[in-house]
Image 1 (cartoon, rainbow, N blue to C red):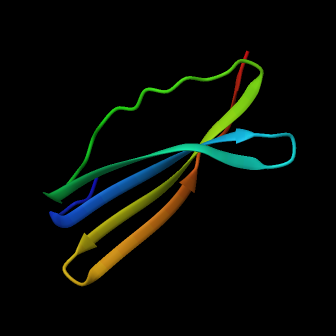
Image 2 (cartoon, rainbow, N blue to C red; image 1 turned 90 degrees about the horizontal axis):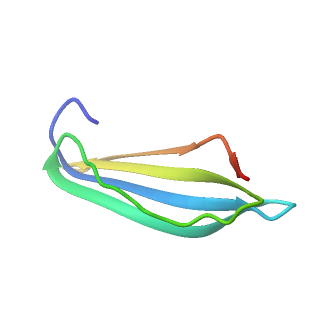
Image 3 (cartoon, rainbow, N blue to C red; image 1 turned 180 degrees about the vertical axis):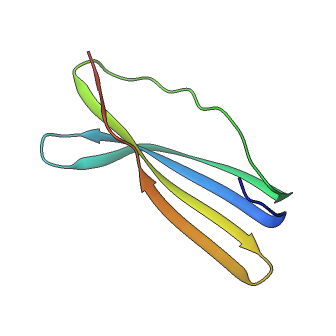
Length: 80
């Protein structure tokens, strides 16, 4: 959520799975909104038991000629 209206907000989420050596992107989704201070949405996906998963995110905000991009990664979970 921003503190002022911006012309474009975009959140791209990457679902990653541990393959035993590295994290691999297995799916992704993009949520976006225009002339707003926030965005929201929901995502439904399936998980396979016996695997570790995490989410990597790219947050993008644009207002006029200014853009801001932030990256983050969640902690991982194990699906039993």
